Image (cartoon, rainbow, N blue to C red; front, side, top):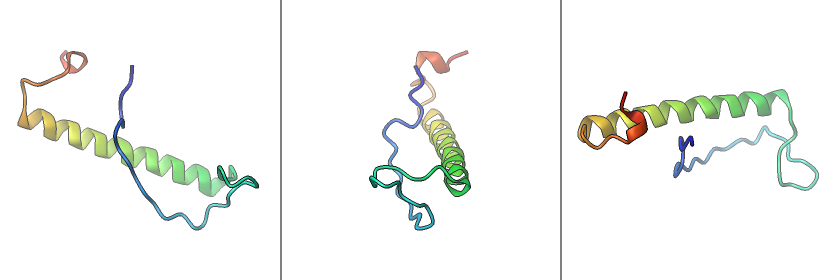
Length: 68
C-alpha cells in the first residue's frame, strides 16, 4: 500500500477557485486542475525531502519496502 503523504496537512489560500452549489467541493475548472497538479508536485517534493532527511539521520531505520 502507498502511504505517501500520510500525516501531512497543508493549508492554502485559493480565492480564485469557485465552490460548487453545495459548498463541499470546487468546480472542475482549469484553475482547479492546475492547483491540484501543483499541490501534488509540492507534496511529492516535500515527502521525498523528508524521506531523504529521515534516512540520512537514521540509515538503519529503513522500512522493508525501501530496501532494494
